[in-house]
Every structure is written in C-alpha cells, then in structure tokens.
Length: 299
Image (cartoon, rainbow, N blue to C red; front, side):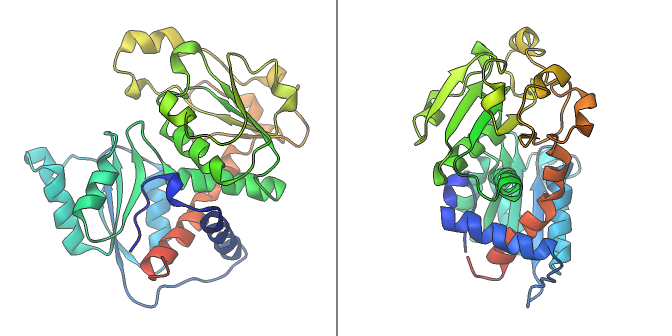
C-alpha cells in the first residue's frame, strides 16, 4: 500500500516510471486491473478536471467508483466528522482520493485509513498528481525536465500546485527557476528552504521572459485569502498577453493547472506556446498510470 500526499513522495525513478506507462497508454496500450477494485472519490471541495479525470482513469482500468463531489448530501453535512467519513469509505473501497479545503486533510486521512490515500489537493498545501501532469507535459515537450529555465508566475503563496511543482522539481535538475509574483504573494519560506536548485524571486516577468523555457501561470485564488481586502489589492497583478508572449522563445511553453480567470489573455490560446489544454488532456493517462501502480499492488 502506498499513500500519495506530497510530490516528495515520488523519487525521480517514480516520476519516470509513471511517465513511461502513461506514454504507453497514450499510444494505445490497454491496461486493465486483474481484480475488480473500487475507487472512492471523496471531494469535500468542488473540482471539475481532477474529479472527472480520476473517475475516468479508474473506469478505464476496469475499477468501479463511488464517492461524492461536494459535502452536500453526505453525512458530514449532518455533523459527521471527517475521520468517521474516511473510516466509512475505507470499508467500501480499495483506494480513497481526497480533496479538501484544509491543509493536512489528506495526511490525516492516511493516518486513519488502512487503504491507500491519494491527495487530490488539500488547502494551500499540495496537489501532487497535478505535478505529475505538469512535469509530464514538460517531459513530452522537451524530452526531459532537466536543464530548462522555468518561470513560475502568479500566486506563489496560496497555490498548492506551485508548492507541489517546486518540490517535484527537486527530483530533477532545472537550470534556473524564476519565482515571479507581487510582494504579498511571494512563496512561503518553508517551501523555499527545501529547494535544491538555483532560483530568484522577482516582481515582473518582463525582464526574464526571453530566457524562460517553461512559463507556469497560476490563478490568484480568491477562495484561499483569509482577508478579501488582501485579494482585492493583488487580483489583477498580471496578465500574460500577446506582447509578453511575443518576447518568448519560439519553442517555449506556457502551462496553467486551470481553471483560469483573467491571468492569460484568451488570444494567447492559439499561440504555439499555449500548452495548457494539452496539459489538461494528459490528466487521464497520468492518473491511470498512478492508479494502476497502486491498485495492482506494484506500489
């Protein structure tokens, strides 16, 4: 049994193993579990892409799915605590995929459950399977995540996808990483203290955009701000527009975990650098690969 709580739960070999199997799936490999399994999707916080891609991945492996995509209609709405809900799902399933608004919810669930727990996003903590997709997109675009210059743009304080990506990149050898955000949204010190590659915090992408191979853009997430006034001060701090993209390398790529609001001009969608919808399309083969490893007992 293996829990996936943080992107640090993957070694470099694990990343490459998942990528290799996802590659085979994309090329038409039919992957089926030998025994019937049940996957529980426990989404205490709304999600579209993550929930649907995990469900699709499980179904394509021949597993059955149970679960919920909001707290409405489940016993937690009647006062049942989180721990008891997890204990109930443990009895009904072979693996539990959790999304929750609170940091640490997935880790707490893993301490209760004897079945594998996969963190599908917890508060502002981590979203490790999104990082599998992010780095896989880079791998598909460049052949390797190594020796590239990255620009991580936007909300670096509350974005769990950024935390997981920054940690995931410690398993590779980025040439350089620019952390680009307004002052109130700088990356948290505990994340920076874990990085083993060269990085620099800056305020604007303009001065470095011509160097960047991978521009990773994040939404400024209103729902994560403890104070709405703080959000109002930074909500339109940046927009990736045609002027900025025209300064990028021809073979550079723009990624975004989606959903987006106004941080990427929609006229960019047709640019060759825009890879965010392609990135989203890789969610199913990556999650099939991960679920197969866990449910088949290989991990």
